[in-house]
Length: 169
Image (tube, rainbow, N blue to C red; front, top):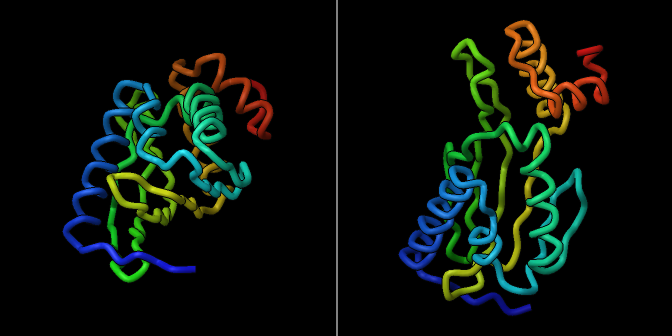
């Protein structure tokens, strides 16, 4: 397998566009532009959901994920740190996944490591998300319990809480 090397400045510019696209998608809840910054044959590895091939599978997954709890309550995906590896055309980063305020100003979140592989022309050919699902489960349950105590627990979150061992809403 031949790996094309990209300059640090090209990778940095593409990653900056990636971050802006993610921020815009989180704000608008429209994930189409985010999906379009992948190549048509993208390989997307999401350890809890499996491996997706192509934009259509990624689009269906992200729309389902971001319209149901807990994804529907995540308000941003800021990069905490990143490393650009020119020799592999990859950017390795840690993303935070903060949830909306449950009603008392608290911030509840979990993080993941993401590895994205650049294909050129502003597009990414592969993404792998690595995280501990139990941390996300604990964060979701913590958010639900807090929202329940504050009287802000919505139906979607209440259903998720019950399905995931969080007790009766």
